[in-house]
Length: 365
Image (cartoon, rainbow, N blue to C red; front, side, top):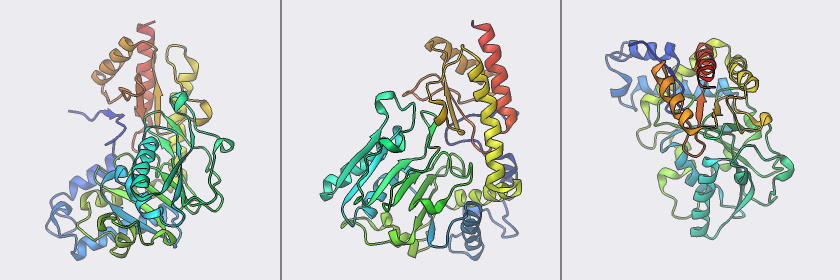
């Protein structure tokens, strides 16, 4: 069977070149006589893989030297607890901006940690009353200058919005969930104190979480924090306190090499802007499909739209799948359709989607 165009929000499409290289090395990685999936994480050959992967992250993302790059497990969801456990240790206060589902879950988790430890978690802003159709503006953020950190989700996978600016938090550390936009464009890492991302959207298969954390945040966590959830211990152990997610780390290495080969994040941004423009330009030209997202806040990675008719939306999802385009059904919180057009989605996939959208609209007017 020929490969389809996979528009899944995650686990998502991977570059074909990466899949081919992984397949070629599946039985014997560089003469080791074994697969990466079965070798010891303490072996010299795997040590080279994890160290090279970290070096590539630092190079591709221009990570400053005073930051650690950690390879953890538990998904971005586990970070919802790790962040307050590790960072609510100075003034015991934190601000959360809720601009979508995952930032809302992070806020709720922080409230649990805060309630258990006597710390204060505040809602700095939310666009929930508008069903998260936009990102809050700087002037809307009610920020505590004594907070230990401010938390945002940079790209909202479910609703299709993204921050087009980095909020000014003064001297308060800024923490960002970048699960669905990391590696899609250049980012000034120094503007953030901590960046985290589940790998399964734009980096690698599920099972790996990347954490980029400034050295000064590697301090004693709240009392009772489990060892596995302690950033300082994970950093001291070079992400090897226990067996790391070896295979996803290896795939991350291949993906980062693929990005470098294409010209780095500036080239990746240009590719992604061109892909997104194909889809958004068509959406702006038609009345058949609708999108609730404020144009200024549109995501390059996740595009949401609908026909305004639930039966037509269901038919669209079914017929597009039959036409070789998978996972276009929207999330239940939004409905309609969602096209996740991450780094590995070729422009041809977006062009095929738009051609199908035109045909579907013509047949269902």
